[in-house]
Length: 447
Image 1 (cartoon, rainbow, N blue to C red):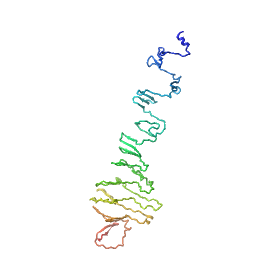
Image 2: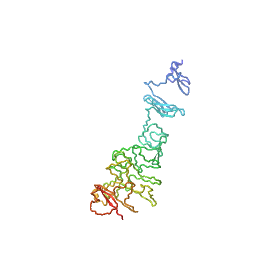
Image 3: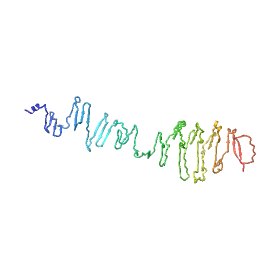
Image 4: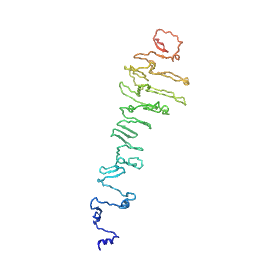
């Protein structure tokens, strides 16, 4: 019986082909399937000819490849159009012999690339982004929806929707050390530059803002700011409350709003100013470099025993403290207050203006004024050594036109009494007193 007849007779059973015997397909034997005892090989006669196709896109079937056990396999599922690796891994390339791998998006030029030669996983294209759907918070360098054992390099902005946690000793480094912010226990240290803010710095702890170290410049500098007031409660360089809503203090301790202490051991002709304020004006607005207002409000008891809008004390504080002589400086000495007004040659004052180094204004009135124990325009006390005089006069130029001046409002008010004193005085020196444009004199009698 011929071989073809034997195959036809046996077609309902298996066909067996010996090792390395090809099963050929095509009129010109275009492709062959061969088992060589180890591998089953399908290849064309001519390279890159034809294709191995399962289904036709309309009538298709699944394709499954098992991996060692029935629970591990690769499934080409035509109904879901998915390739699934079930309990098995996918490896591309080998160690030191990697291969590139691309996953394309739907937008031209956007894809995920594993670049084997660069050892980089790159999102390519302006529309690509890496989205992590996990919502696990990070509490350390090894927790959270995304974490890395190495560094993180970002070329553009970083946005955090919640906290940024930095471990103890962490450093925020700007421009390779140009400016750094370094953490240590309960402290942030800014080094290499300045800290500039257009907003408000708020201190909510016991210390608030603490400056330490050695300063060769200004600890706080407002020189580049522009002050734009908007009223009595408008913006200030430093503010504590407002007139209507002041900050409050109910403790007995002497806290205050601003408290400054400094000690100097320097020698020389210069001097230290604890607080120095200079206001300059080119318009008609008034200038008050330092102003104080002490208001006593409603009291449930007797009220305070001390109300002083300003308090200035000079003190030779130890037994070996010393005050040097004037040394030719007419402004030298020790004074509780040095009040001076001056004008440069060429400056002018209106003929109806008033000027004085000190203006004393007593405005107590009403029922309180009637009940007051003692009331003065100026109250002076002394103790220890006896001063040379209550008031000392010295001039380097013009002197004073009058010792006292009473205008028309004082001519009919106490302590001026127009009549009732009859005194005859010889030709003696006197001090000039002007009362309502009438010249008088206080005689000086030698004793």
